[in-house]
Image (cartoon, rainbow, N blue to C red; front, side, top):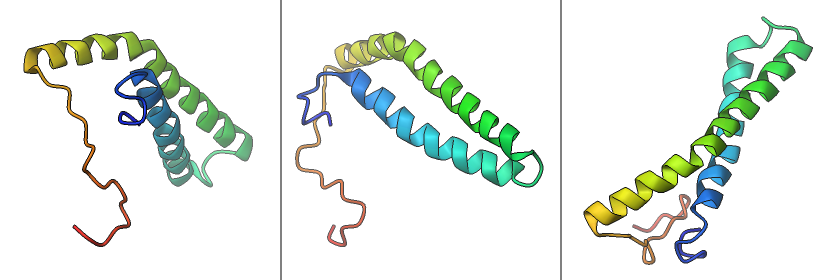
Length: 94
Protein backbone atom coordinates (compact mmCIF):
# COMPACT_ATOMS: atom_id res chain seq x y z
CA UNK A 1 0.00 0.00 0.00
CA UNK A 2 2.89 2.35 0.72
CA UNK A 3 4.13 1.93 -2.83
CA UNK A 4 0.65 2.33 -4.30
CA UNK A 5 0.03 5.53 -2.33
CA UNK A 6 3.59 6.79 -2.89
CA UNK A 7 4.13 6.99 0.86
CA UNK A 8 1.00 9.05 1.50
CA UNK A 9 -2.00 8.19 3.66
CA UNK A 10 -0.21 6.38 6.48
CA UNK A 11 -3.50 6.28 8.34
CA UNK A 12 -5.01 3.97 5.70
CA UNK A 13 -2.24 1.46 6.35
CA UNK A 14 -2.30 1.65 10.13
CA UNK A 15 -6.06 1.73 10.58
CA UNK A 16 -6.71 -0.70 7.74
CA UNK A 17 -4.36 -3.30 9.16
CA UNK A 18 -5.86 -2.78 12.60
CA UNK A 19 -9.40 -3.31 11.29
CA UNK A 20 -8.41 -6.64 9.74
CA UNK A 21 -5.89 -7.84 12.32
CA UNK A 22 -7.85 -6.94 15.43
CA UNK A 23 -11.01 -8.34 13.88
CA UNK A 24 -9.40 -11.74 13.46
CA UNK A 25 -7.55 -11.55 16.78
CA UNK A 26 -10.62 -10.57 18.77
CA UNK A 27 -12.86 -13.12 17.11
CA UNK A 28 -10.42 -15.99 17.59
CA UNK A 29 -9.41 -15.09 21.14
CA UNK A 30 -12.90 -14.55 22.48
CA UNK A 31 -14.27 -17.68 20.83
CA UNK A 32 -11.39 -19.87 22.04
CA UNK A 33 -11.34 -18.38 25.55
CA UNK A 34 -15.05 -18.09 26.24
CA UNK A 35 -16.95 -20.50 23.96
CA UNK A 36 -19.23 -22.54 26.19
CA UNK A 37 -18.47 -20.31 29.18
CA UNK A 38 -20.48 -17.22 28.22
CA UNK A 39 -23.96 -17.13 26.74
CA UNK A 40 -24.05 -16.43 22.99
CA UNK A 41 -25.46 -12.91 23.37
CA UNK A 42 -22.74 -11.92 25.81
CA UNK A 43 -20.09 -13.58 23.63
CA UNK A 44 -21.16 -11.44 20.67
CA UNK A 45 -21.24 -8.32 22.85
CA UNK A 46 -17.69 -9.02 24.10
CA UNK A 47 -16.43 -9.51 20.53
CA UNK A 48 -18.04 -6.30 19.29
CA UNK A 49 -17.05 -4.15 22.27
CA UNK A 50 -13.44 -5.37 22.24
CA UNK A 51 -13.17 -4.82 18.49
CA UNK A 52 -14.54 -1.29 18.76
CA UNK A 53 -12.22 -0.51 21.67
CA UNK A 54 -9.11 -1.81 19.90
CA UNK A 55 -9.89 0.01 16.66
CA UNK A 56 -10.78 3.16 18.59
CA UNK A 57 -7.40 3.11 20.32
CA UNK A 58 -5.69 2.92 16.91
CA UNK A 59 -7.69 5.87 15.63
CA UNK A 60 -6.91 7.93 18.75
CA UNK A 61 -3.18 7.12 18.52
CA UNK A 62 -2.89 7.85 14.78
CA UNK A 63 -1.66 11.45 15.33
CA UNK A 64 1.04 10.11 17.68
CA UNK A 65 1.98 7.50 15.07
CA UNK A 66 2.46 10.28 12.51
CA UNK A 67 4.76 12.17 14.91
CA UNK A 68 6.85 9.07 15.70
CA UNK A 69 7.18 8.12 12.03
CA UNK A 70 8.14 11.69 11.09
CA UNK A 71 10.75 11.75 13.88
CA UNK A 72 12.24 8.39 12.88
CA UNK A 73 12.45 9.32 9.20
CA UNK A 74 14.20 12.55 10.12
CA UNK A 75 16.62 10.92 12.58
CA UNK A 76 17.46 7.99 10.34
CA UNK A 77 17.33 10.11 7.16
CA UNK A 78 15.58 7.25 5.42
CA UNK A 79 12.17 6.43 4.01
CA UNK A 80 12.34 2.90 2.67
CA UNK A 81 10.16 1.52 -0.13
CA UNK A 82 10.15 -2.26 -0.76
CA UNK A 83 9.66 -2.01 -4.50
CA UNK A 84 11.58 -5.21 -5.32
CA UNK A 85 10.22 -7.34 -2.47
CA UNK A 86 7.68 -10.01 -3.34
CA UNK A 87 5.06 -9.97 -0.59
CA UNK A 88 3.18 -13.11 -1.66
CA UNK A 89 3.34 -15.45 1.37
CA UNK A 90 2.36 -18.36 -0.86
CA UNK A 91 5.23 -18.06 -3.34
CA UNK A 92 7.71 -20.90 -3.30
CA UNK A 93 10.62 -19.04 -4.91
CA UNK A 94 13.01 -17.05 -2.73
